[in-house]
Image (spheres, rainbow, N blue to C red):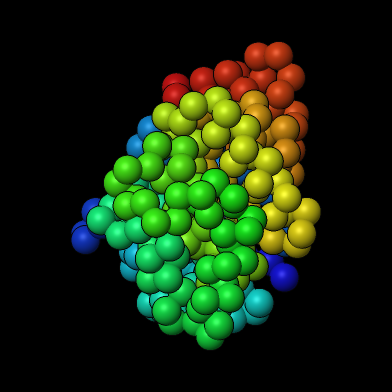
Length: 235
């Protein structure tokens, strides 16, 4: 099973941001997406997840088109999405955030219990309001909220931005485990690139809403190579 994007064009209203992006996200692997600020990385993720309309092109998962589907429908197809911002309900408790995310699915309580077992720190904070959590704990909660739907593909829009190193390491470790268990992950990388590239398969570099390069992610760990690639798309 894999998610396939072909010739994708999208944007905000009449403003086109993506100009024909191609992307493949296989199962059991982490796929990295890199590029300068304003390259269209978040727009790409939001479009795949159904939060922005497709102007042209195709998004297919399990052979089925996702174009025109609602975010909930895409989630039910097996594609989970963790946006970078506004990804939890701050006034709700940790447990109620998870419950709210599981309401559209059978076995909601069992799903909540399962993710609390995976993330013990959330179990310890289950009765706390999300607004009282640290940045790392809130991001862990956001990932857990996506996982209660039981996705086979998980889209992460820079989940480690601004986090303390201990939470960066935890999230990298958790996501690696998810991929090893069979999940396909697409990870937008802006911070901590070395840690993410070390566990990724393919890296897509995009610029100005277009594919710039597609490379083996680990090749970007060679001294100076990542800087060289990003400099090429900034000229």
